[in-house]
Length: 137
Image: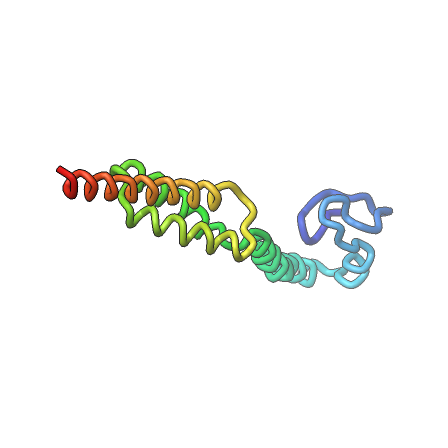
């Protein structure tokens, strides 16, 4: 006998499929002819689809703000590469704080905020040096 859901070979004495857990006794007794067996095999795959999508949605909800945190980290790195571009620094801070506030658990958001603070601080120092040098000299 074979499992109607996953196709795994099972003994006639088995009550449940060892791979997917399908109740073999119920499906074996109710689907005796080949036409209904083929129909139930095709339906078994469709019965699993809502569960698969539900599991995917649950996995996505486990770490909210992941995309925002990644964007924060990337903007922080781009801001450093582009010679401390203040716009990228500010965006990295805002996106990083947003990801942390929605409960993101990971390093990207923290790194984005730290890089953003470094970028904004360096820009503030450069502006201060510029104004001081033009004021007194």
